[in-house]
Amino acid sequence: GGWAFALVDYFLKRFFRVYPFFGLVAVLLRLLPFEYQRRFFLVETAEKYDLYKVLTFDFDHRYLMLWTLPLEIAYYFFIPVFVVGMARLRGYWWVACIPLQAWVVHDGFYVFRSHHILLRPHFTTFLQGSLAAVVFVKFNAWRKASGFEFRPWHVVGVRAAEYAIIILLIGECFRCLLCEWVHQFVPVSPGDPFISTLLASVIVIEMVLPSTVSTTLEWNVLRHWGKISFSVYLLHPFVIFSERISKKANYFDRFFERVLLLLVVATASFYLVELPLQKAVHKLSRALTQLETKDFGALVHAVTLKAKKQKSQRPFIA
Image 1 (cartoon, one colour):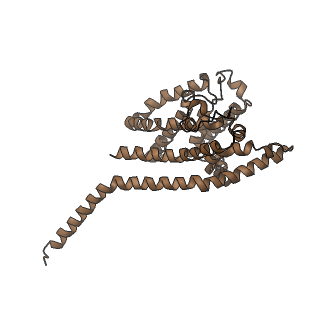
Image 2 (tube, one colour):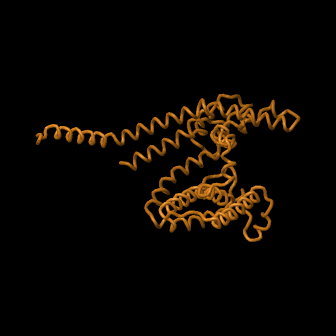
Image 3 (cartoon, one colour):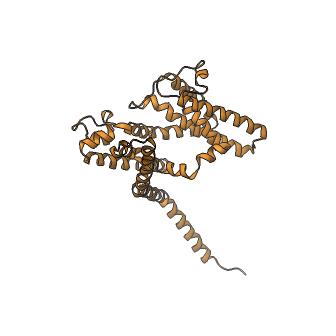
């Protein structure tokens, strides 16, 4: 019934959001000479590029940054299970969230994460985002139900915590500031820095109590880059590894040419490829909604007609 339609709608939106454009790039790369395959996506030999294996996410054919996409798509299958589980727990959602959060923190400090590996080491990074979403939704619902309002001393405490988290986040990313002091008490992550919990905390705080941090990040220029980010993700190798740009001696010439060219290419691909796909998904979603409510709508229409007919046949009494 409703769950089936919701799941179909969910997977259609997720699939069409990422896979068709990825498929187009994979086909384009297949049509290019080997010289360009090697330059742009680090394909080792002329016989190495197998379009079928690339499209089916074969582990040895996840070239350059394409290793992240199958991990993201695999996590999509977990999200409905997570949502249903949290919904069934109702008021006891925290019973699951606390051990899951402990697992995220433990993995962050003790599990090796790097590029071109399978989902398992990165799973808790995705999970942190889902946990943050649950915390925000539950807190927001409680806040509306209770009428809670932040007092000045609440705001001061939240801001102090947020700015401390931001300093820790910068320190972990660049191995500076408080990084050495912090790692006197907790181990250094064996692979990539553990920043998912810090980043999720800042996002939740800004959603609950917005400040200049979120205002800055909502700057129109950054919002546009966010809108075209998937095009940037898929197409940036064609710009970054361009020989014409790489040969320029001046660093700033290379930097600004890459930024401007990538902006133009990604914006064009967004409006030519991504946006039409998104519109097609919205049409499919509306069609599914209409299909789901068709029987119910027909029933309501029949009942309404019957009521009107009975009313018209009722004798008039002065």
